Image (cartoon, rainbow, N blue to C red; front, side, top):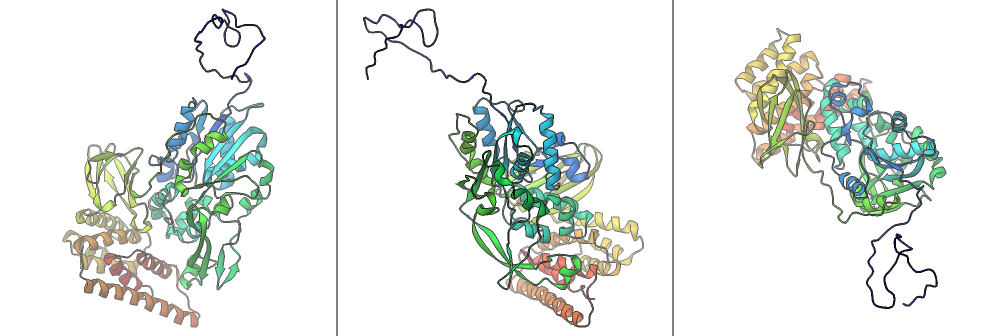
Length: 576
């Protein structure tokens, strides 16, 4: 294309638009660097990122229940599904803690408290006057960020929610009422399982532990109907806080961008059956016990309809809940006005063996490929099972170690152990070494002997442990459990006994296995029939009986031979 410029020729000694371009009477080659013209008054807003539930961790808060400052929370070490986004920020020249910030926080708190804490954090950044921040949050973090935006619209340029359950999540009903966590595998479910294992020792049931330590879950119950019984809609527990905030959401539509994960079957309706008399005593499943589900589109955790609002300009990405941040990196960068995008988008894998050490010790884990040293107490072994791994603890101080280990996709696999360790001590722990589990039984038995020093059953247990007599140990254990009605330590012992049985009888014959399964189910059936008979007589189980039934029922979830053995024994003492 030929273009004639009648203006002044480029003059020497100048830069950019007016500069000498050479002798125009002949051929010349002119070279220019690319340059960008922008309004010198335009600045990039500070960006604050909020991870989702389980994305932040503090050992003193989680293990010892100490109150700690927000600044003491750190990113949970195995959480890597935000790294690509941070890489995108830095590829655009942003500097962490100067241009972009990661807000780690106590995700267990009620939602209103979390919004208040976040406000204090923003104030602490020194955002004043006409300054604005851009807020990006995943899952729970997105809800906190957008509610804060609703309360502080003048301080926000853009708020982006990634897979956030803005209208709640159906799976939370099962978490809050039944401590069912690993419905899908993501950082939130893993962190909840670790927390549950750490703190269950302080409460009688998993549900009590969840409600005592993670009140935030109550604020994530759905704001829409999601329960049915016999085909009729059942009024769900109402989520006043979230519902009230959602009624005024349109006021920030010009600032809000929701990004939703789709392509995965996600629970929309729970079909309920009547709760048992034992559930009633324990205050569980007030609306009914889940029997089946109706699933529609979402990210396997949050429904499509829950992550967005009508009229909000939502963008969909095909990804499960944990992978939405990875899959939407370039969308986020574009929404924030950052010019450079990321070339490679990866999927985060959360399936594997998880080990957490909250103690005065250094932990190393070997699952067949060499030692992996902990990071802030965590070791994550992708696509491994805890039964294939060896744990080595090296004492760095004198005290009690707290070890949690489990497979991320199996709620019933999680194990908690503790014990004394001293400086310089080395302890080798394996899920598949029977001596370790006998040692755990001995430690717990000795702790009970402090309270019951002359108890015959406890002393018989100790003798059986020392001689590794599994049958006598189980029988004496059940007799003590019936005798003293203890519900904390004896409940923990079930995990240890299950491992002992399965290690000592690794491959029962099909006949032996089927016989034991039949026995366990027959004792459960007897407990159920006795409950119905007692109800007709206006007699109801007490707390201890209900806790026994509840633990027996838990053993029948993902059962194995050892669980069937213990379920038979425990169902047998429900109505003794």
